[in-house]
Amino acid sequence: MTKSKIGSTKQKGAELKAEVIRLYKEGLSGRDIAKRLPICRSTIQKVVVEAGISRTRSEALIGNRSGTWKGGKVKHGKYIWIYMPEHPSANKRRYISEHRLVMEKKLGRYLLRA
Image (cartoon, rainbow, N blue to C red; front, top):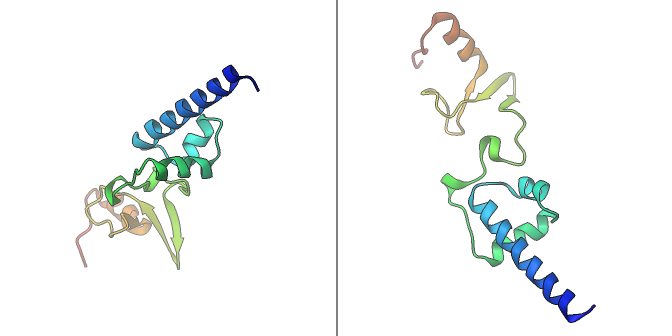
């Protein structure tokens, strides 16, 4: 490689790191960044750690921002739970049981606490 190519490669690497950091600070997940940029998720994680960036619990990739998001509907035991963080009866994980939502829709109001 010539000196000009080495310099341009380092410059591109620095630009790529800056773009990774910018996207991560905007709230994109490593998976979403990897889809946009020609870089793997493990490298993205290294860049973020080296930059000293950490997310607080409130900034964590939860809900549909998570890489493991499957639509907000999960089955636990014999119940189906729906992700609804704004619902007043949602549990600490921000889910509410589907049967409660069905009854609330039928009644046209929130159910009372048992």
